[in-house]
Length: 195
Image: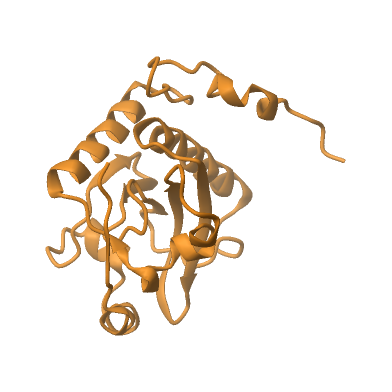
């Protein structure tokens, strides 16, 4: 996968985020100024390719409804439903894109990008430590510009894994993971009681 980072116009992005329409609502309404590649839609939650990815295969998960706060605007059942979608999409992303680690986080601000959304960001294997974590997530460090065919292929693979899943997503090499996920991570799938 050939992923080059290109400079990103942060000033224009901040202006658009703070003064423009909600990017999630605009995308869902079909606004051509806010194109994203839809990966998943169950009527309540959507997943789509990030328009400004800092890593190949970076995906956003958001509620269809314009909600702004993960604690105050979402009840426990909706939160757990959202986390289930995030988990399934993250498994599909890991099956579709080589990753050393997958970052899951919710960002945004009441000052811009205030529609609740989660970022699923697969860290490419071999990324130097100093370029990981927040450095890997920051658009100010540049965005990944993949050829459109490569980005479309990633989206198609993610969609494929999601369409074949019923809670657990297949492994990129074997096509199947089973109930607990990737067997390489079997030790991590042990459920422990809360203390």
